[in-house]
Image (tube, rainbow, N blue to C red; front, side, top):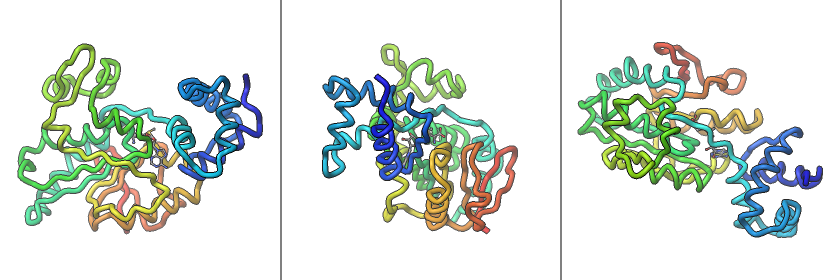
Amino acid sequence: MAITKADFEYVAQLARSQAAIVLEPGKEYLVENRLGSLAQREGFPTLEAFIGKMRSEKIINGLHHKTIDALTTNETLFFRDFNPFEALRKTILPKFIETRGASRQLTVWSAACSTGQEPYSLAMLIREKFPQLNDWRITILATDLSPTVLRVAGEGSYSQFEVNRGLPAVYLVKYFSKQNDRWVIKDEIKKMVQFKPMNLIEPWPMMPPCDLVFIRNVMIYFDVETKKSILKKIRACMLPHSFLFLGTAETTLNLDPAFVSETVDKAAVYRLT
Ligand SMILES: C[S@@+](CC[C@H](N)C(=O)[O-])C[C@H]1O[C@@H](n2cnc3c(N)ncnc32)[C@H](O)[C@@H]1O
């Protein structure tokens, strides 16, 4: 049965207030698909009964959190967009190696990391191409709002379809082992990445100063005010000379004048003025 207007508005308001996710009218099909199966798994006879239960609750509880989790879009792939990783390999990491020899530290943040392909791509690139970083303190912090994707990311277990998307064969052979029909990332890469839950619209008191911030393909789901406030918080945790990477459909332009866009190799990167 189609979702009622009032139920859709309730869900849209929940997603917006708890995760900044904007669900415009027209996205009813998405809510019906994703929450319909959640309602079933939770033992409700209909989507209406499931939403009715949430609406009757005074405080945000487990059902609301599962709803928000189910409404996230988790599309990702290894070495997504290719150019940012080439810019790191050719220019940015060699420059860090030249200028950071004294501290021998590098902190990378993959925000909204989904099922882990992005932080694992960064870890494999560092391991494969920069043996001189082996004795540096490399921190790769990977965060997401959704406990479901973080569980998958922590397991580091991928289907054939997932490893076929963007992962060079040489990395697959070297850094994954085949377990039944799954490809599991080896411990030497897995232990380079720390996964943590984090909602980008909440305060970030624990964020360390970062050299590289990847926050790609998540702000497209947010409204302008939320993008501005997130960019302001990102600024506060970027070290001088650090780099921000956004998705190809994202920009800081008209949102935060503290950032300037540069092209490094073929990748658009953002730096603090
Ligand atoms: C499309 S995926 C992007 C994954 C990866 N960054 C990439 O570019 O391939 C978007 C991710 O943002 C996460 N997300 C959505 N809203 C969020 C929020 N308010 N705080 C943190 N993560 C959020 C979702 O759970 C989802 O995994």
